[in-house]
Length: 362
Image (cartoon, rainbow, N blue to C red; front, side, top):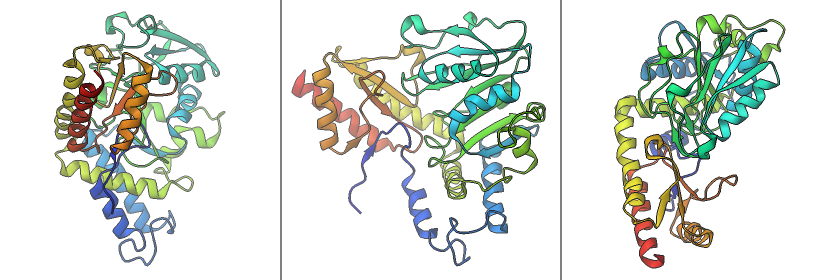
């Protein structure tokens, strides 16, 4: 195998090498079945074991209470943008959204297609370089839920604490930071996440939803989009993304071996500190986009004083074996996504490359 790339892709993103190697070993013959996990029936005992193990591991690692369902769905978090108001936005109620950037905006626009939606707080005046002050969140009296995007992948901001909604269900899109740090799941009515950043490959979406919310799906919406459909059928109502679920199981086992979510938080803080310190100590050559109080553990966004230098940075970094450092097309700049599976060595190498690039071009 050639040298592994320094993978800072925003998603699909880096996977643990140990997980990839284990999947490679089991790819043709899974546990002596004489076939790959990709070939076997999702009704088989072997696959049901994988399905159940993925959900059980997630419960254990994330501390999910017994009165929550763990669903393994398809369609990505983007489908959840529509599924949430379809299932939970009752007539006469308002879906409330904290506007923190690109992904929050997409969720809000989908909600407006199905009912009344309102912005409860926003950081647009700061070009979304920070999370709004929690005290600024204004919930209407008829709020059905409050939706937040816990980590904005494009802008590189992250909630450092979560709002107290006084009984209104709190819903969080955690696609880009789930399992990067401990969370009190009981504070949320629902948490959802696409797997392709911290949990595995693309193809499966995790939904953690409180029993009472899952049970209230209206019978007037499509069967496949109702949470109670999947809760009643253990996420096996239809053919699941079986290989992706299998990979999530392997990633969760890897995370458990690495000290669980608390161990992963310290690992992530050590990694990102290397890069944030390089930015902060560059004398202004590099400028972090996110306000320091809202900086993300998962997506580090930064600029250089000229777009020409930014293009050169991307070109030289790619020649040096780095992947994914170009900022999102909607905002430009530079971005390093440091998800759970990104090794410390990759962050050390990036910090060194950044320092050397500054010496050459500063």
